[in-house]
Figure (tube, helix red, strand yellow):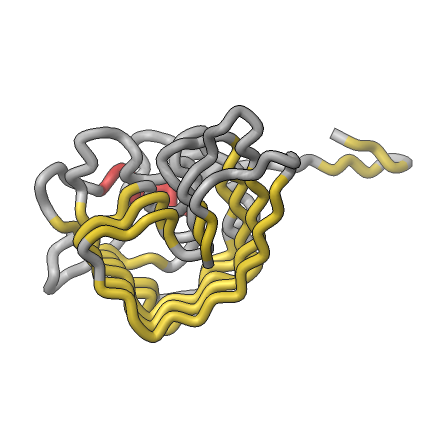
Length: 199
């Protein structure tokens, strides 16, 4: 809270809250959850289902500046929540994740992501041993197509951890990745940088 003469300014920061739900769609292929505002991003994690694929479609550009502490949405074992995420030609701006485990948007990405742009994304890896990247720390049997991203990454590795750092994903196993355009800046914050660093 700041004061300037008789005017007061209050800053609010949104965090992930359990119970927030989508206003449109039911997560099926024929009726995907519709993302129109940053509040819908908070509903994303609450909507994933174990052992199933949940469908999402963006209908607007989303500025995530007010979601400063993003927790990756599939970063807890057994990592069995798949997505079909259609960016629909829209962009996510000012995305930031500094999660202790797999700082990224999806954590472990299973399923597909397409037609999406990230602008001014920022990832802070710290000493996570499980991977870091703007889309996912790990991508397993995923399909990533027509994705463009500009990512600033700050990585540690001072204690010998902080492995698998990439602009798009930290590691990829059994994946199809095509038509991807990356601009990635990776900075090591210690003289002993992390292992396995790539774009």
